Length: 147
Ligand code: AMP
Figure 1 (cartoon, rainbow, N blue to C red):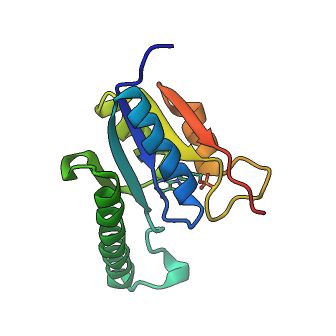
Figure 2 (figure 1 turned 90 degrees about the vertical axis):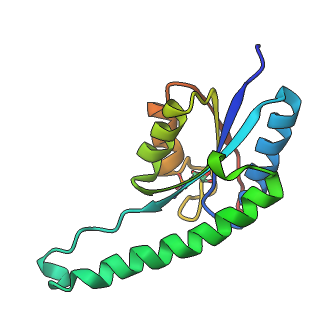
């Protein structure tokens, strides 16, 4: 197996994420690879009639989430020594954005958790599942257990 050159770690700030982060860091060291990180702020549903017409509320919420995510990303980037140009904070569908960032930056390995906040112990989460199906490079789903 050839060495990986560019590893992309997908972070969701879930507490078990340290296991995934540590694995990505170890792989980057072993492979002497560049390590990048990505977090996607899930796009909120566009306001429809059931939410009323108060559009600015949702826009404020997204801005708030982005601000919080930016701080957390900066902490992780510092811990992993990832320069700012290799730290991606996106909005949209998490799996699509992870795959897009990977493709646009010639990533050859994506490292994700087997599930995040919403996953069940033995099931593959939806983001992980979708990234595995759509990525054009290797994907490592680090097994997370709930015990
Ligand atoms: P899930 O499939 O949503 O249970 O999450 C599985 C893994 O996908 C997590 O452990 C993260 O590595 C990654 N992931 C989930 N949501 C996001 C997100 N919003 N941004 C970046 N990575 C994510």
